[in-house]
Amino acid sequence: MAKKAANELVGHLPKNLNIKGLLLGMESSESPSLDTISYIVGFVEKNVMADDLYNYYCTSMSDKPNSFRLRAMYAEE
Image (tube, rainbow, N blue to C red):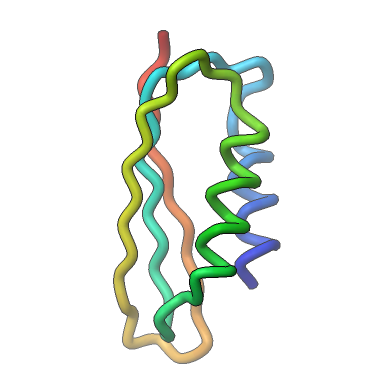
């Protein structure tokens, strides 16, 4: 679920987006593992253009079974 969500999120971002700040929120029915968080953060950072990217991450729990949601807000240069 997490890999699919990361791919979908990056697919929604404009091409050649140059950003200076990124807020990435993960919401799931289970606490995401460090491997999952690391994969998502690395994948998203690899797919955006930024000189000095300010990152902010948050995770939260959902009461919906077997769910995973990934949200992002960004600030452009």
